[in-house]
Image (cartoon, rainbow, N blue to C red):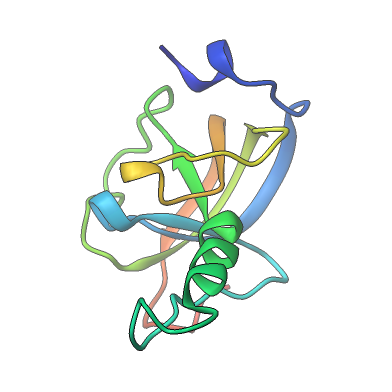
Length: 123
């Protein structure tokens, strides 16, 4: 079932940010925020699990299945500037590939999508 059939969603709104479409590892980084980094080191070390859960909860998965963003959105891991109208899950959960994202946004309409010239440079 679709996410919006199982979870409460926020009202539709306009979003802008960076989308990294890397198949199973894709994520959306809203404008004005930075990507959360997965913890390194030994998974059995004190505090590792808490750090992992904090990062997982901050990740946002984009569901673009209803809009078919078109050419340039292939799975290549490249950063893309995206602006769209969408609906975000109201409460955190386990979304995306293997539940590795805390939220999901269903994209209802793409306004802008363009590849960034190089990593960290987009606008």
